[in-house]
Amino acid sequence: MEVKCPRCGRTYSKVIPPKCVCGEELEITYDYSIVDVKRWSGRNRGVWRYKELLPDVRKVISMREGGTPLFKAKLGEELNLNIFIKDETRNPTGSFKDRFVTVAVSYGLPYAENGFIVASDGNSAASLAAYAARANRDAFLVVPKKVDKGKLIQMIAFGGKIIRYGESVDDAIPYAKELAKLNGLYDITSSSNLIGLEGQKTLAFELWEDLMPTHILVPTGSGSNLYSIYKGFRELLEIGAIEEMPRLVAVQTERCSPIASEILDISGKTEFTKALALYVREPINKERAVRAVRESGGTAVIVNEEELDLGEKALAKEGVFAEYASAVVVPALFKLKEDGYFEKDDKIALVITGSGLKSVYEERERSMITGTKLEILRILRDSPSYGYEIWEKLAKPMKYQAVYQHIKELQALGLVEEAYKRGRRIYYKLSSKGLRLLENIEE
Ligand SMILES: [Zn+2]
Image (cartoon, rainbow, N blue to C red; front, side):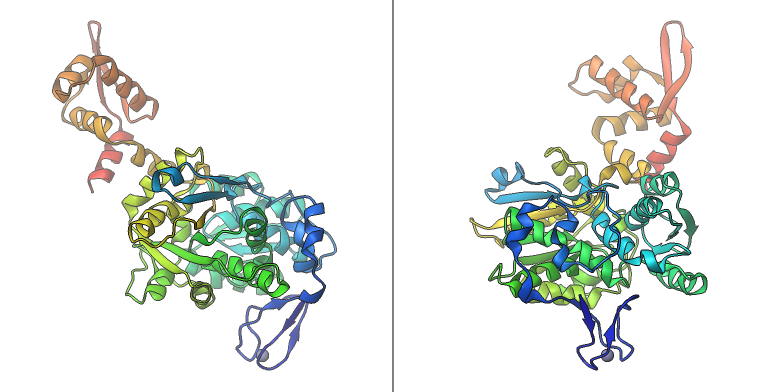
């Protein structure tokens, strides 16, 4: 591994900064002439299979991350396209970030006597907590106020030291940097730790080995994943394993689209999105990510908040439970298909970055409450009612049993509760949680 400034020639080792002191962006390179990709197939699948193109480390802290499955999506039949799902939810802590963290933690171990630190909107922090635990080091996790609950629970379970700071990860990054300096911690924040990005790029190697797609749709927050996938393919070009780079497609939401807007040359917003992992207002890797997409000949797609639910449901039909921040790629796929962007023989890979199990529960419930269930909640807001009465008020061509089933499910979700009994009739009412949810939906 070599880190040499392309402008002034300074070289770096040990703790690698993202930029040279002269201001130039740094990049990690290797002696590509000695890499023999045939050796890879004899090794276990996973990040460390590609060790010639990873930083040297004294000790590998690993949980067999990477080597995630790639499989054909049923969705492709409907769209008459070849669609594949790269299921990164299968990583040890449920997200693609484990690729980053295994390399960053293994490399950073000698510099992390006092521990590791990361600024993260969730997945990186959950992952670091796990890997630091394995490495017997402390993990300091600077996370914004709004974090997916499941990710927070992971951080706590792994014994991470959680520091809540700021509205989005943008605020947390400089704070983590400061804490790292003051306390001698090794900072693995993805926008500033080039070493970890080396781990992330292995996703490109796997896509090449399993399929060699023509297009890759990538959920985009900080832009670090886009950039690292790009770097992986560029190294394959360098080695001579491929002749052409696949087209990279950056996907963001209309609420927060700093990278996609730049690529599309339109003005975009940087507001809160329920795809929490994509809520990055000023992505530090923006330039790198934009360049990656442009040099690959790709494009960007912006999807709206409602389409996230649609994406999640479509993936659920494939048996994949994705977080909103990952589900964005599905509506993006539909849009590109509609625009006639693809050719029939294209091979399209959807990168599903993180598991839905980690996401906020209230958001989940909100997306599950539609149609008849929503009408039942509205009826019960007006006054407590019993089953048959609700069925009458709905005045829908459906069996009473179906209405009763909806009530049971709403009860199981804690949105509806028994108000009182009159004879054999059970009157139901909205719980305070149900009322809150209804207000939320009708906002
Ligand atoms: Zn320099």
